[in-house]
Every structure is written in C-alpha cells, then in structure tokens.
Length: 566
Image (tube, rainbow, N blue to C red; front, side, top):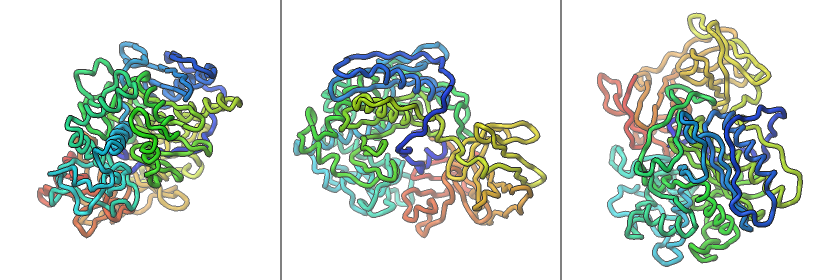
C-alpha cells in the first residue's frame, strides 16, 4: 500500500476517470527518456503507428508526473503481442526499462486470487456462497456472517486495511454495514481469501496461484510472492524523498524500501512479457471462455456475480477482482494496483479484442497509469475499426485546478500572515513575500502546493465562494483575517501526528471538528471509535489509546498502531 495520506485512509476513489479524456495541448515537449517497442507476434493488424503514439504518450506522462520508467504490454484477441519499455529502471545507473524485468502489479493480483477461487468452485473444491467461517478456523471474524463471494466483491463490510488479528477493544474484526449491502474496497478481505486458498489447496496460497493460474496462463517468470531473493529481477522502485507534507507531481524521488510480502491482496509481480498471457485470458474471460482454468459456464458466472462499484466510477460494476468500466461509452475490464514502489493499471475490451497493461516503478500523488492503458484501448479500437487515431490525453489533467479564478485572491491569516493565489496560464501559483510555488488539485475544494512555507498541509477551502481555507489548524480568509476558532477542550489533546511504517496520520482540531488531513471530518461514534463523517457504520475506525497526562500516545487505525510523534 502507498503511504500518502489519502491512500493510507483508503478513502480516495480507486479507479474512476473521465469516460472521454481531454486531449493534450499541441506542441507538447518531446521526452528525452529512452523508449523501445518490441513486437512479439504481428498476427493480423498493423498497430505500428498506434503503438508509436502510445510510446510517445507514455514518455510524456512519466515526465508530467515525474516518475522514472514504465513497462507496457499490449495484445489483441487474434494473437498480436507487443511490449513497450519507456524510461529508466535504474535512474542512477542510467539503465533503461526492459520487457523482462519484474514489476509489482499490486491489487491487480486480486483477480488472480479470484480466478483461482472460481476455478476451485468449478472443480467442486469450494463453495463461494458458503460462510467464510467454514474455511477460516481461528480468525477473529465479525459477528455478522459473510460469504466468500462477498469478500471477492469487497461486499463483506470490512475495513479497507486491517490486520487479520487487529488491535481492537475486543480483538475482533468488525463490519461497517450488513455484508452484501454494498461494496467498500477491502484489502483485508483479500488477505483472508489468501488464507482460504491455502486451506483449500493444502499448500501456501502463493504456490497455489503460481501453479494453478500463473503457469497455465503462460505468465513466464511471474511470481505471487515478493521476496528479497528475487530483487535483482525487478526494476528499481522509487518514492518521494519527503512524505511529511502534501503530495505533488514532479517531487524529488529516491529508491524506496524493499518489503517482502505474500499478501493475496497484492503480491503478484510480472514482466510485460508475462502479463501478455494474463491480458489474453481476460479477453477470453470477457467473451465467456474459461479455458484453461475453468469451464465456460464458470467464466460467465465469475463476471456475472457482480456488484455496483462507485469506487471505480459512477456506472462501474465489480466482480471478483475485476471492474467493468466505460471508455467512450463502451465497456472494458479494468483494475489498478498500488504498492510502495510500483503503480499499475490494465484495461481490456473483450468486444474489440484489445487489451493493455502498464506499470511504473515509482509511487507519487496516488497516480496509476490508467490514462496510458485507456489511451492504448482508444488507439487499438481505432485500428480495429479503421478510423482515425485519437489524440493523446492530458497526462496531468487530473491535478489541474479546473476553475483557478474560484480560488484566486489574497488570503490573510493570524498575525498578518498572508498569501496570494494567482491565476496563470498553467493554473494557479501560491506566492508570499518569500517566493512562490506550484498549486495542484488534491481533492474536492482542496489544493496542494510545493511552496516551502505551505507544503506541510493542503489548503482546504470552505464556503460557496471559497472565501476561506484551513491550512492545518489555521484559518485564512479572503482579504481579511477571520477569527480563529478555538479548539474544543475534548478534541485538542487528540490532535497531532501519528506515525508507523505505513505512513503518518495527521489529526487536526479545527474548532469543534476533528479532521484527519486528506480524509476530512471524523466523528466519535457510540461504540467509542471515530470514523469519517459519512461513514456512519464505521467501516474505517480509529481509536485513541495510551493516554499520558490526558494526551494519547497512540492512535489505532483499523487495528494498526500509529505512535504519536508530535
């Protein structure tokens, strides 16, 4: 999992993008990154020009976001296979990305677990409609019964992230809503599915995935177990040099920490060449074909047992690790994956018979290369249809402030402190007497800046006219300093920064409101926990613990310890 604040809380939208992408402005700078195209099997159609455009766009996207390299796999249903390698696998050594290097695919791994479980049901080894408790003795499950299929569809009511054995008042997991009622993305659900796979198969679940899914699909060199012993097979992964403030594009990066994992929520790693077999199977699955993993009937059932998924878009559906979304009004299979060191995405259109996977060896601003994979689908659809190739999207459009004039002006805080937000041709900049910095959109009515004096917190605007904003626990007003709300006595001791190896949880007391930065207002619930204002049932739960002189020394986020550092 990534460690920026929105990723940490699991509240950001997982995979939604505009159905029709805005075109990139003409005259864009040409990238200097190395980029190669390798066609493994030409088959029927000539995708040459389309893939050259995809290669150029991928390089432009890396430059715009500020990431080192990207590996891409493209296939069609007629046997065409190609890989694109863009940018650097090791920046310091100036080593380019190659198609055989491993990249961690993150949550795309969930569909691998889904394939195994549906194939196992097809063989009579498991009943996906059965209670999870049938296959998980000893796990501190919630009181409400949930099925294996509900875990596959993130419909169990479980937290986004939690340990299997959480630190909670009763030592048990919990549900924030009745299982089956809706979807709420849950990595812990898939961690439990990995335990179920191990139980049913009689061997470590990663071995079951490798033997029964990766190898039959021809995913040469792929693994479901991230191990230090294999590190030389991977591209170097990069992270921001500082993560104690807001996330911004083009931030300085350094090689990130290596973490071993066999978590079924996201521990598969594969090369571009290896992912070609996966993509080709997705095209067959979407057409109702199950071989070589399962029967056609089981394949159809796998995608039919779905649920509404607003987290992947307003009209998206989700089934066992695979979302169905719209690209230009036409359906496509889709998922993304985010790890500490890698960011990935795929799209597959079974009707047009085209698919693309992309992965980047870095993590920044909750980015996933979904614009690259969408553009690949648009380009390849055009080739299939014999129509003009579409223009590329704006690679940084999702971070541009859509209405700069709404936020422009001078804002004043306490003690005469003031900043000016100035509209420019590129959007907005933040300026004060010490200089200026870029501004990017970081959420609804929230802006981020790399101005050194204001990079610690985002600017959270309030009011219909955006006439004031919170910066941390300080309130700024347009043209005049507003009165500073006094933090409620019961909330003030809770405020602070709480840290773990998974990141930093920033708690702010803004008058009578407790805020987790990047996630909004948290409310104390009758059960003694805190949860986001809209999360009445408490899918996400926070406890404050270990008080010393009335001040908590520890924050427990969904059963995980975060220790106070300020």
